[in-house]
Amino acid sequence: MTTKTPFELMMEQAQEMAKAFNPAMTTFDPKGFEKLWPTMTKDSMEMFFGKGLSKNGLDAKTRLLLTLAGLTMQGAQAETPFRMTVRHAMEAGASEEEIAETIAQMSMFAGIPAMNRAMELAREVMADKKDDEE
Image 1 (cartoon, rainbow, N blue to C red):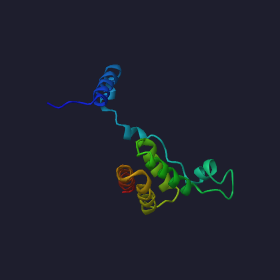
Image 2: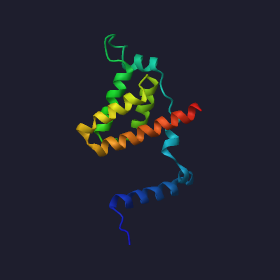
Image 3: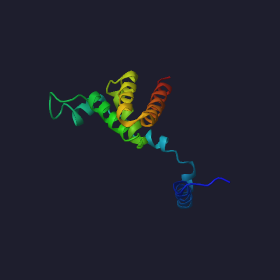
Image 4: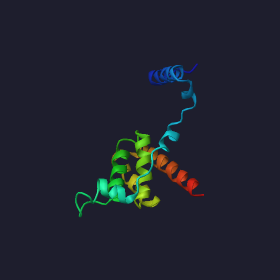
C-alpha cells in the first residue's frame, strides 16, 4: 500500500476539479502552452531591458545569464520562466556552453540538486530548439 503525501493528494484533487470544470483540461500540457509565448528578438530585449536605459549597461545576453543563475539558485522551481529564460538567452546569443556553465557555477551556492534540475530543464529547451530547426 502506497501512502500519498498531502501535496500529492491536493494535486489529484485539483486535477479532478479542473477536469470537472473543463473536460478539455484532461489533455492540457503546460509545455504546449509555453510555445504560445513568442521569444523576443535580441534587439527587442536590448531595447526593453538593456541598452535602452544605459548605453554602457549590461547586454541582453548577460542579463539573461544572470537571470538563469538566480532561477537556478531558487532550485529551478519555476519551470516555465526558467525554460523561457533559456530560450531568450539563446536568442540573445548565449551558447549552450555558456548556459551550462552559468548553471554549473550555481552548484557552489545552490547545491547539486538545484543545478541538476536546472540542467535538465535547459537540456529540454535545447533539444526542442534543435528539433524545431530540423
